[in-house]
Length: 382
Ligand code: ADP
Ligand code: MG
Image 1 (tube, protein in one colour):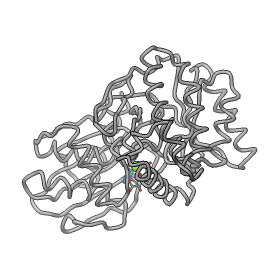
Image 2: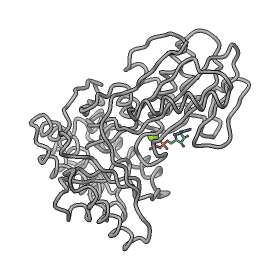
Image 3: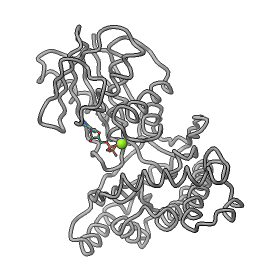
Image 4: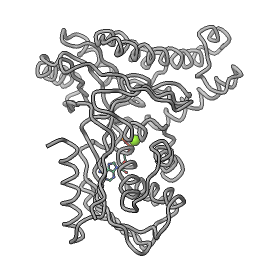
């Protein structure tokens, strides 16, 4: 049984257990990796995500009133409200409320529902558990209502829910890939035009491994907001709408050396995304190696969002012959390192990383071996 089907069955089972009858619709949406393109999305640049075989499943039944009852296998306490709230409550259910609230403007009928949420996407590790949850909620609500909506519109609604309702300034990549992914492919997404292209991933001789530092530094969200501001200010100073339009030749116009490094990261990272897509199209997985390492160095030195734990895992990986390339993935200051390697060397690599990391930090990383999968699946069950 596929990873998505397992989550589908688990969602149905949790729904039955919680409510005593079957759901009206089920949707299962994947988490994702991003091969390269970090801190480029909000600069209107390029990203290269692929969906992975870790999912959030939502089983749901519409109600005739506004009441919302939510069960999640991640959180022991169910959440119940007499009316779908139109502003943030400050708990995990906000992602669900947010999507339902944004969607209510686009659909008819009463806004209440009952839902059971199950997941094997680690929360807060940078694999987009929130994007998978938003998409699964949006798609199951639409399926239950028997309504269709173009994927791009759903992605924008999910992003709006996260930006406006939850209050996290995130880009469109996470919901987009959860909706549009195709197994065996990454998506080259232009975050300005929202044009996307499928790009074939390396075949089964190569695998993606995520090594989770299991560190979540406090700095992460404040630094993220600060980098966004720095990028906006730098674009303004250069007279550009966004750093997407910045060129290498603009760098000498930036006096402050810190600003110059930030801008250089965005320019070079955008170029690396296009190079990586090229390498994949040429069926040259090994061509990705230098790109991944260069991305890490740029994030470490120019953008200054890495940390010792991430650097340690990348260095350990780089020393192993089966490894093609590695880099930190996500906003930074913790989370996961993404490694591309020869499948035959997987067990050895995990052991090497676990030992080296424990020696340095007296804790073990967590590993996720991931495969690429299709985007969201849904079914109306009555
Ligand atoms: P990530 O990198 O995993 O997307 P975020 O901080 O963006 O991290 O999103 C994590 C949030 O998403 C959680 O705090 C919670 O509110 C919500 N979430 C994720 N998975 C689940 C789940 N299975 N059940 C309920 N809420 C979830
Ligand atoms: Mg998220």
